[in-house]
Length: 131
Image (tube, rainbow, N blue to C red; front, side, top):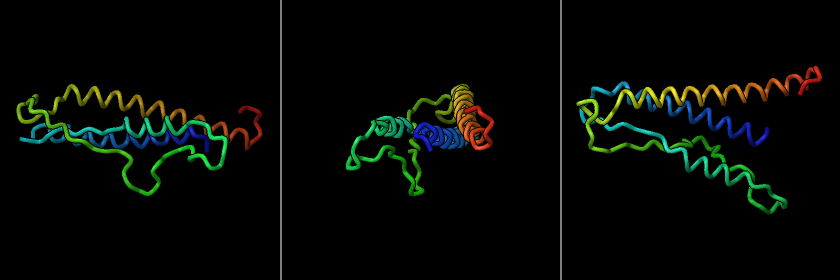
């Protein structure tokens, strides 16, 4: 599997976790003293981008630094800002809906690219001549 497809799979995992966090924030918009949550993705992205450096020797570090041990790849962080936006806590429905729309677009992009990759492989296997 190519490195870019692995990165796209990580992006799909991120979008799934992000959607869960956004849903939780929206569900708790009326809960007093609830602090909105978010996911930290930048560390994982930086690790993966840095790991894409080509290696020329088997003694070099491996090419992808992806956690495969079943532990969560993402860190859920609590936004403890004291600003009460909804009247009960710091959840803003406008912000959550904007993040949901952005996350949906990101998910559609990644799923389309992964689908395109597997369709190309299928076409090569079938011998349709299009790769």
